[in-house]
Length: 483
Image (cartoon, rainbow, N blue to C red; front, top):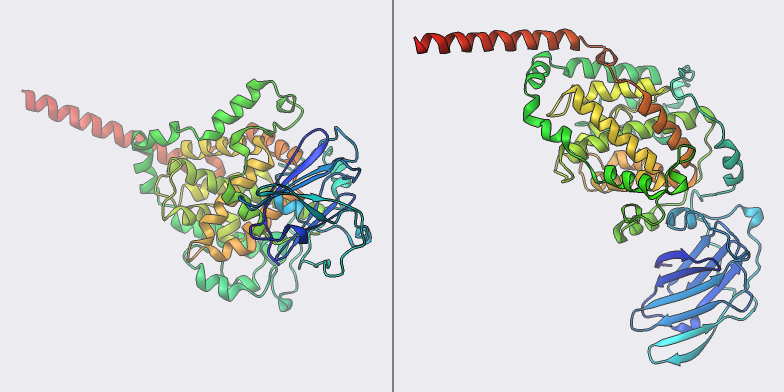
């Protein structure tokens, strides 16, 4: 079966779907509605969606097939008019299956086709028995949204992102280490290490522990940090000041939303941009969302914290690349994002916000071409803005990272164990409340030289003294020449 390209929008009373299904026989179209579950079949296309609200068949539904465009147009009434359906643009989430106990065979719409006008055919829904050849297709690692009600209450709990926690107990090394998103991967180290050896800073991944991976990361940063390079960059700040002054589009977008008076951009909630073009998914992004595998994640509170903090770490790498390339990706973009992320390059897990910021600062001063603490600070302002813009902004950033990594002959393996899962999770289980909490905490966080654990202040003082000595020497030569 093929999954058709589709979009979902809504009005006060209807959910409207547009499905791209060229060269089908309209009389073979079958549509079933069972509360919040929608199913569409027209050989060779099959689509099943789990809506965030309930639909109803009451005679107001409309179905048309445009032969010229190859599109099926559907208008399905909401059971409760005026109810707003959240996340209709989160296509992967819509394609997730419901729990087994809720999958009840209750077909409400089938079809008889009646010719309406040239090129347009109307599909008249009538109640009928479920066709035997429409089968429930279990998707591997099916995605469930049964926790949504619990999450609403969970969202109200404020998390102290700066509170340090203990690392988990080392696992049984005979069974192999667990790593990647939600620690759900193991036994892939040989492939990952062979392919991504230019990026990875972790040794013997399959027999590593959280402590050993942290040590590998710190050792690699210490080995790479170059004091002379840092002094040179400190004195050459004017050469890349344009990168510090650069303003990504997200800055303007957030300002526009805040000025629009949207109540959700107040201090008590996350600004969302349902109608802002910046957060509308492009056709390419919609295709990516449709192609994501439906997955279910069982995540405890400690792991949830690590996942959110890992997200900050990854988005820092993304924002650093965006700023230093001024929005124009290069062949080094995938490397930059991965290398600056301790999550992607070292499989490190963070337990507090200070650990994340320290890692970002150290790696941004050790690996990229431009290394200056002022650049790190402004990049973290970019991160804060994306977090304030909410899940859609973060999802678009993750999809951008995914495209870069998928087409990179080295970094693609990191997409498979990290980014793909983040793209699904951000739609299903992440919340704007959590992202807003992170943004607020990060905005208040003071990034200092001491977080690097390197003598940056002393190096900067040496740089100033060296600069003054050079200036005095040049001035002396000028005076002697004039005499």
